[in-house]
Length: 102
Image 1 (tube, one colour):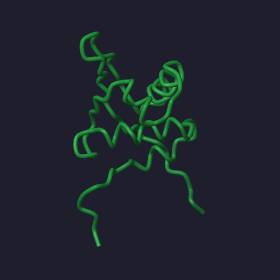
Image 2 (tube, helix red, strand yellow):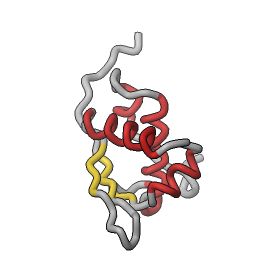
Image 3 (cartoon, rainbow, N blue to C red):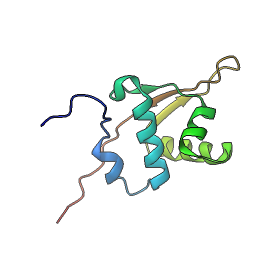
Image 4 (spheres, rainbow, N blue to C red):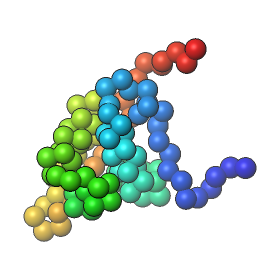
């Protein structure tokens, strides 16, 4: 039975990356979930909303997780305006070499 709604697709490359923490993977999954229909490549939640939903305690922790995704090629982002507070997150899928599962 195929899923047709109420799910979010996460690229396998997220889990194949040797450089991402579980928290960074969770942030990527959340941003993917918050994108249009869960399958788009852009997401616009405010940092306040992200922190509340993911129970992230400080802005510094959130910035570090965002930076972890940026450095590893999974995210580009542009800080939001002082009026809306919402940043523009562009979700990326870099080429990660296949890891043998055997």
